[in-house]
Length: 96
Image (cartoon, rainbow, N blue to C red):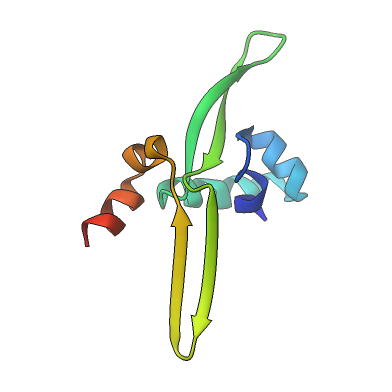
């Protein structure tokens, strides 16, 4: 749900949790895990009316297709150049 919520447009963490209807405590844990794993990355900021600056997050890919053929899993992803350059996961995957 989290990946779908931020695949097309970046959102602040509170917006992601609201969209996914995930409790704050477990939501932050899940989001931090996705960020550390390189599947979600910071993309810009949002300034609130009181002047607080919040990070916006988005998936590092624009589209994903998963096919299972016999016993093989085939994953095809579309990664924008900026996300490719900023994601440690994409660097690891493509270096193999």
